[in-house]
Every structure is written in structure tokens, then in C-alpha cells.
View 1 (cartoon, helix red, strand yellow):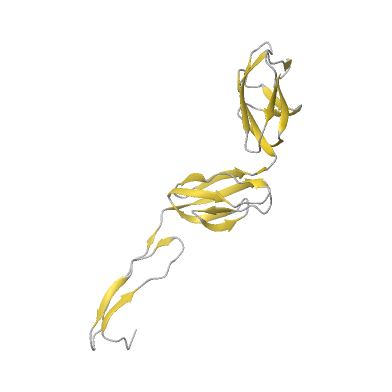
View 2 (cartoon, rainbow, N blue to C red):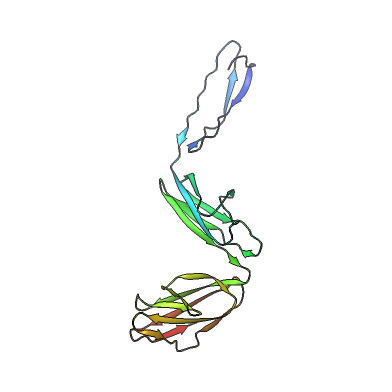
Length: 202
């Protein structure tokens, strides 16, 4: 650059995706002399983040407080390390909590967020026993142990257990539970035995 007034000046560098930007540099320009300096860009160790959303179509997610992305979108050039995924508020829906994700070099880290309507909750059942045992809520499903089922209306829900080829196992305690508020999550242990008997524990 020519015709620079003598004195102190600051050289800065542009941001380039996937590279670390050199720090600003102070240079002193002298009369009739050319002052030289340099900046070195280093490529980041990077990965990607992809987030899936279950809920309203207008829901969006952001990474470290930046951006507004739809379900299934992938963000690239993310520096390795820990980052925070957050979700937008949508009227009439319960917003998922922020999530911490760890990005690894050249890998895509995936996570998800589930929105619940204000009058809905979720139910999760853990089964101890045969791996083929499945559980049902209000007569529907066929879920494996540990599966969380969202979108359940508040009120009384009925749970029961089925062992494949053995019929329905009846819990020894009442198998109906009340989902009281939209953010409730009923988590019950149902212990399955080979003779298709089951015990539900609160």
C-alpha cells in the first residue's frame, strides 16, 4: 500500500471459514521506507454438528448462540471441543433444554431436541428381563426398554408388558399412572420374568 502517512498503524486480517485469523499487528511507517509485516493463517481442527428436531416445523436450533437452523441441517467448520446447542421458543410448546455436545476432528456430532405441547408429556419405561419384552401405552406401541415416547396427553395413562410368544404380563400393582403437567416424565421400572409375570415399581 502506497502513500501511507508516517506513524503508527494497525494491520488486521479478514476471517476465513475453517482458518484461524491472525491477530492485529501494530506497524510503524517511516518516511520513504517500506514497512513489511506478515500474518499466518492456521487451519482449524474441525468437525460438524447436525441437530434433528421433533415438534413444530418453525422450531429452530443454534450453536453457541449463533444462527437459526431448521431440523436436520448440518453446521460445518466447527472447532473441536465442547459447544452448546440451544433451541428457539415456539408459542404453545415446551422448549427443549440446552445441550452440550463435543465435536471431534473430521466427524459429525449428532443430537436431537423434542418439543412437547403445553398439555403433553413423555413416558419412558425400563424393563429388566428378556430382551424381547416390549411395553405398550394405552394399548399402542411395542417399545423396547428405555425408549421415551413423547406427545402423550396429560391425564391417566395405562402401561402393560408383552413377552413375545407368551402373552401379556399383568403388573402386580396398578398399571395406570397420571401424567399431571406438560413437563412431567413418568419413568417406571417393569421387571419381566420368563413366565410373563411382571411387577411395576414406582
